[in-house]
Amino acid sequence: MSHSLYVQLAQPPAVEALLGVILVEGLAALEADFPAAGPWPAGISHWHRPGASARSTEIEYDEGQVRVRILAGSSPADYILALRFAMGFAHLAGSAIAPEDDEPLALADFRAKYDAEWAKGHASSTLKMVLSQYLRGEHPSIQLTTLDRTLHAGPRLRADLLREPKRIAHRWFDKIQRFNYPEEAGLFQPQVMVVEREGVAQRITTYAPETRSLLWERAELVALYQGDDDGLALLPFERLVALLGERAEWISEDLLDCPALDMAAWASLLEAARPHLVVEAGGPPASDNAQAEQWLLQHAPGLIFLLVAGVDGRIDDKERQSLQREIQRLAAIDNPFGVAVRDILPLVQQAPEQYLQQVADALQTGDGEPLEQLAAFIGAVGSILDAQLDNVQARYSKQQLYNLGHAAASASGGLFGKISREEQAALDLIKALYRL
Image 1 (cartoon, one colour):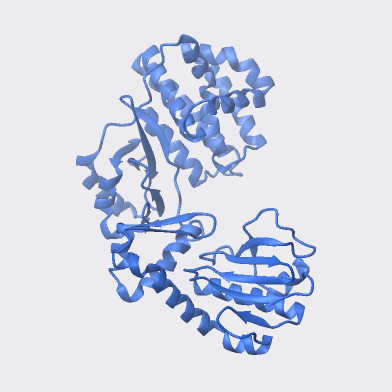
Image 2 (cartoon, rainbow, N blue to C red):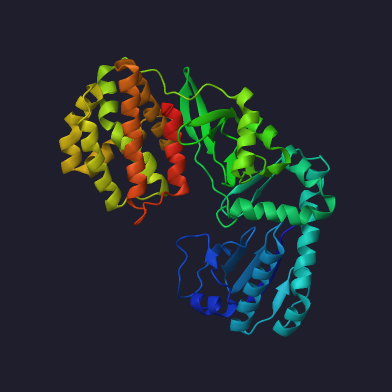
């Protein structure tokens, strides 16, 4: 059900010349190593317009011919991009364009026949073929590669689409836009962390008021923000889905678009959720291995720091300096945790990169993803503190670790120390793990 356009080329055009003719702002190849200039290389590449494309446009150049392939289920905008590619190649080569189901056409004739109306109509008819058996329930689910991700559609998405039969195409492509470009749609995607509760690993994500969020169903529990003084409340994911009702929308079979509730609506949600809350998340049982416990206490500041400061994929000098400042405060605590931190303090002050590398290396030793391992280690630190200290000292030590994370989040936030939504989600997770 794809549709191909062919152009004969005596020689490959220059990449920069073709992109200059197409004149599509922000046009990019999914292949990171595609050259920015020079002769168009042989082989297949995939192109998209960030923020607009539903599926990529496939360009295959080989032995004097280029094929522009419109993938099945592409949006009208994807069709327009493919037409521009074909016309760009034809313009530079002085060649005709041969659609797969039509005779070769001169550039002017092609432009007149294959216009925006053709793109809209062909996109609509092709999408109907792609979705027809799925919407009738003959296929329980389908999978569609959008750009570099795969959208899974099953019973949930089918039921949602069939609520408005006349707007299926519009709503389908709207869902794909949010799936491909959540940030452009104003959607915040909180992390999913794995923690252990009573010896059972569970996945937790977060949801806060006035924040439109894209929640992954892989999370079993959702930590709901209750206020700075009340911490977080843990609610089963499926219960949140039920409480939000039609205010939330599935954009794929496992991604839920949750609304930005104002404070009044949020208070109502919390009240409705209260009977269904579960016990706050804790960490795994403390290890019997004294050496492992000592290592975790010494590296607890690094674990917290990497969770918060590393959430955006980079750590800057201001954040490193905050770690060195805050760890001195931890080393001054008059309990076994402070003693453990004092033992590692010289390394952090003299070689912070080496200290953080020790933490990073440890995250590669478990079976789970590094982020999941990080959350498990942080939870284990909490269990060790609970086992070694009285309630007051344990809570105080956990609060100081949280403060270290908050300082790291504020360090690179400019003059006013603005904390990003990703950093706030990491801080919220620490609160949930440590019951702060």
